[in-house]
Figure (cartoon, rainbow, N blue to C red):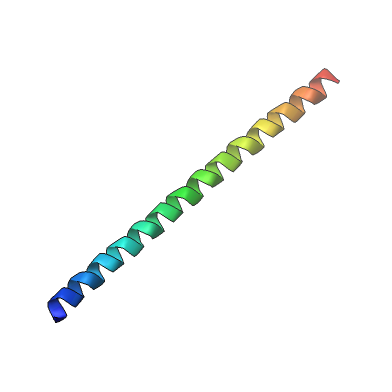
Length: 52
């Protein structure tokens, strides 16, 4: 019984670890996209100032 429960615990831990890794990767991607958006807006603002 304890062997099967240990296997279940390790599978559960692995699943939780995979979820955490996925969430962290998703968060990193969102931050990178936000950085790109901010950079584009800065370039657009500078372009508007130069054209004014």
